[in-house]
Length: 106
Length: 225
Image (cartoon, rainbow over all chains, first blue to last red; front, side, top):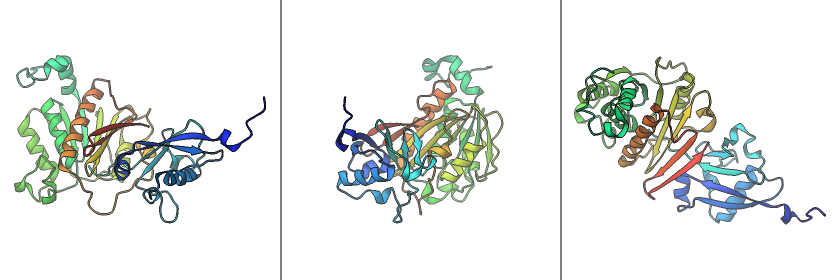
């Protein structure tokens, strides 16, 4: 059997979960399936995530310089990407990505 | 346990029995922060019969605290919070042992010996990380946080869970005062108390799992970590 030849055949869906004040900002959106391609990273996923939403959101996730913003934790399979490879963390089929700005007050 | 006060606990003994009540009476719990969450949570713990509390908070009572911090009143303005808290809690139940520390929780903080759990009712991540690092092995860490009409809880067990500092890596304090809806601290503190009771019974429901509460949308969500 020949291997799948097209990029679309290798594409996969990743579910991005949204929590806390970010969900409030996105009108209650709980999660979004994002179509990914081989070589996808957290950084490129966030760009696709924003494009799919058709509204600005990365300003809540990244600094103007493109670095991870400190107010939102980004988890890939339960691990904070700051303990993985940051925005270069590879995304693979089956991964679960969560965006959560935890409440800071007490 | 001697002299179980069956009249005081008449409404809860049917729920968890004398063994459960005695378990609470033997427990020593560190309450880190007696502001919005901590004031209400410590009150619930004392009313429920937790035998020993350590209260840590460096703050004094301010007018802006009174909309949500249930242990304090206008007559307390300017007073050290942990001192007022101890007075009010002992007025509820004079048999509880309450020790206080009017200091910051920062690097080098020493957790009291013998505690089975620490409840994080702090208002900044640096102190939360320092608290977690100070805990002994096999100690429950119950995190709570609020902002606006939202909040979250999380239970970790030191030595087996991911360290809190890894989960919330990179989190810093937002600039300026954090808006907090008064009802949110009461709801979150109640949920934290319930989770603490389950921890004391060896049956936490939020171990390695955030419960995210949105009081505006009236939703509960879970996030495993």
